Length: 192
Image 1 (spheres, helix red, strand yellow):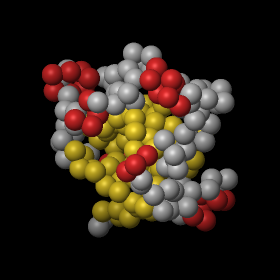
Image 2 (cartoon, one colour; image 1 turned 90 degrees about the horizontal axis):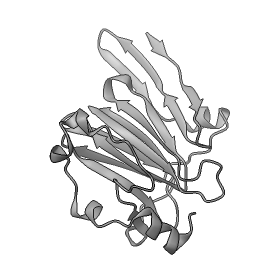
Image 3 (cartoon, rainbow, N blue to C red; image 1 turned 135 degrees about the vertical axis):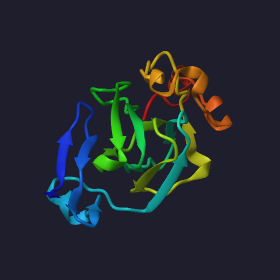
């Protein structure tokens, strides 16, 4: 069976749900999750600068991250396992400013999202050893690395922690425990 690329717009401008090209046969499957030519034919400019992978335990939350400067548009796909992926619009002139959307990214489904510049991104890992790929259109700059607390009440992301057995099973890095609140983000930057 062959699945061609499909691009679905979401409520947040320039945030797309994407079904990549996938061909299944008796050997398994062949997946193409990015094509500059196909993306541009669909009105999307995403020129790769760097590619990263994370491998995470079930219950890990990596969130809500962004770069203060040199924003990083990213094509995100769970290539193995399952993550609950969250995007928050931090663009102050956007009609969906402060809105968050969530997506189940599942390795076997091959689905992905294109996160635009000016948005925060994170996810909750729902299966052990899930692997997530980030195909970024801007390189990573440690000096601009930043984020907002995953459980910030002003944003109010509904993480569905029952899917990992409750908050007692959440795993957070020290980095994610010390991020700023949305209020601090607004006081410091006023949005992007």
